[in-house]
Length: 117
Image (tube, rainbow, N blue to C red; front, top):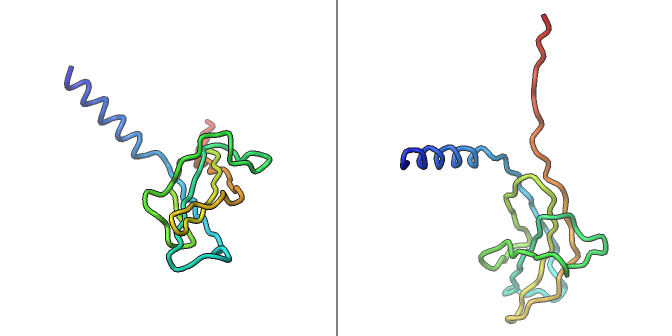
């Protein structure tokens, strides 16, 4: 039984390792009241952006584990639809959400051949 579980685990791990990923690079300008101590948080949802740009409704996930001090953030994502927004953190207070922006990371294309005899 252990060998079957180990084989399943190894196959599942190999399949996950082969899952193609994409990189989403987010950039934004500094707000007019940003200071040297300003940091940012990035939130995302694995869905298309709401038509009205609202950040209420879906469950947004904080993408960064530590405060972001740069005006850019890179996230590795699998194929799918994504939407993000950014907040500014200054003096321990988080701003209202920015506008939302997103897109679709499409799966890799298939290459095939045909042999006719």
